Image (cartoon, rainbow, N blue to C red; front, side):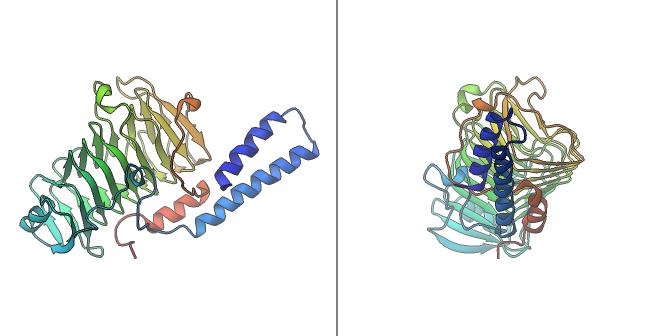
Length: 336
């Protein structure tokens, strides 16, 4: 049994014995709970700064491998990027140096796009995935886009990992229009307002319900204002082991009947760690478990039993150790 499962079982038993104050059984239960949390904390120290394959939803639905079955090429110009990004064949596309885009560059299916060392940068524009599948975007710095940094729509099996994202005109990682099986991990978000949208409109329920399933893990939301993520319709969305720092708007928002499991995150100086209503959107549901709050407000929950179970295997860290792990490993230059 994993530490997170053990803690949950212990908590349920403890509630059942709430009237047995001072009993030996209750003392043993508290000891077991402490041991479970300690075990999770010990795992945190050994948590890798990168994975060879995605954790979470992008591991489902056939998995996400990008261009692993194709050739590897290195590009340093807009023309080179366009040539391989839009090709029908699978490719691993290595970006060396800075590529200045004037708009959104399309990516075709079965592509990996990855920065070389800590040098790969895309400025002025971003990447867009529309109606594609099996795409990996890793180890790139995105800044100054006149639109989104990364836009995902009508696409599935996408892994966005170990990027540095800032200062776009619109979103940094926006996922919408029925996209599915998404993992967003180990990214450093900073210097931005509307950070990570999941579902773009209250009127697209017929398209989005049953989809938009996404995992956000080991991301550093560093002073960004809101949408970490801002969720509509999807259930379950899994937000775990992220570090939220100084987010002046809110941390995680669940709206329009979405179900979000907010698990073992570290919130520091966040007045509204969670929200169930933003703008004109109807409320969503939130289940909370094992989060750590430092100089932060109260997290709100709603209908936790309506948040669907997480279907994949994973090993969470204890929330207290997440800050150290994420700040040491998120962003570019950490792929080993």
